[in-house]
Length: 435
Image (tube, rainbow, N blue to C red):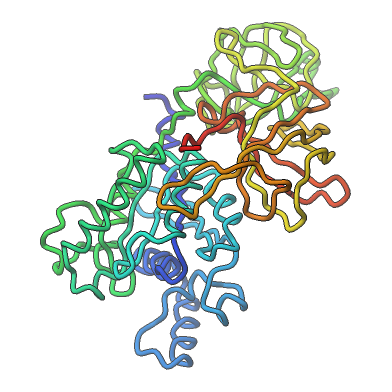
């Protein structure tokens, strides 16, 4: 096992999702509280606020719901990022909103997740927003999913209730393309802590891991590690120092390995130019590496002096991405302003930004039925809509299908006047459901 792969296992990025009042913020607060990842003054502030609300026990959701509007309304309306750790692993957690009008924030929070925790209320089971979030997670190709059946204390820890919900969700997960071994069901009570960090004596029929135990042990090496090499060039390093004449001819290409592995001796292609060359060295500030895998920030040196600039992509010469100025993609529209065919926007792909024209808008994803379907094309896309679209870019881009490599298969659409993000784009159709 390489040093890079070992390092990647030490960090898990995961997101939480679920319907309103399913207890996401309380669950996150419980994780932070029980892993002793909260400062004493934060706990005291939560205790005071809980007393003011007339509660006998601390409201741990207040550890996460930091916005005043959230505290007043009792809902999460933004993506709250939290960082915590245990002796076994570090975590980056995105607590995403549950309300339907903030589905776009779920897209943001889950876009880089290696695992998602999807909560359902044991009293309500799988509801419309559960199906919506599951579809978004499937669309974004989140590789692993935990179905956390919360509030089991309110159904008297009934195994039958849990198994019925698990069966319903299993049918939904299969329809969305999740593999059977990609979904783990854990019954929890976020309020009391059952099966969150400590195993509960009140669920003797449950033999699986606690939520934290699963988060600490689940493999976090996603498909990007085994994919063909991809690295968007972030910066070209050309040091010019009089006291270091040995660096006069130094030319390195800095960036983060988006997929695969790179090592000295590998043949690579520079895109979109198509020039081929060989890797001479892979370096970091701490010295040279024998290899670097997905997620590692490095500087790559090449054997040939090639004209390369920011926005170019270094890729495996044996398995290069497709270079094209025409994209068939799935758009997650994030803005209040609607999208109409013919719109002229900016497209950011990796480290390159180019102009783009939106062509036809195709089928829109409907999440109103038991199983998601693709409906007929709308005249325009509104906020939270997910639909197919065709685009033409001013410059050719090296792209992969999002289903194969997330980093080079995704892009952002940007509003030219304001610089605001309008949509998240996924190359191809990564969610195969009925039409």
